[in-house]
Amino acid sequence: MAVKKAVATTRRTKSAEASVGIDTLTAIAQVGWGDGGHDTSTGDVNNPDPDATQAAGEFLVKDIENASVDGTNAVIEVVLSADEGIGKNISSLALYDEDADPVVFVNFSPKGKDQDTIIEIDLIEEH
Image (cartoon, rainbow, N blue to C red; front, side, top):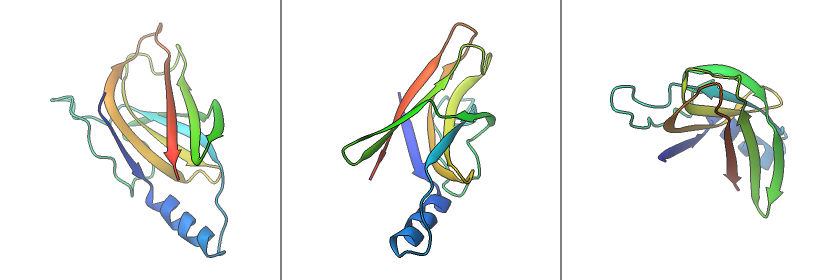
């Protein structure tokens, strides 16, 4: 599966400000699911836009399932349940912080979604 990631410009700004004591970073709290992370005619994965405000083709935002730390990496578990996104070709997601600002955008090969499919993705935000 092809995957392309981009750290959001807003997160880079917050991180820079936190590094010099101007601001603090807020925790990752939500995930936005979308179906616009790929070229519909070729299936190729698009490059995410770090200046975007939501996942490409976003249709649902929900709280993250679980978060943990593995060494220097934040591990974020996100789940699209059986009754969510039926009929969509899921190909993008965005993580949002507690201020509802985007943290990272991820585009990936489209996954068809029907009522029997649950999509689980473990994301690692490397630091």
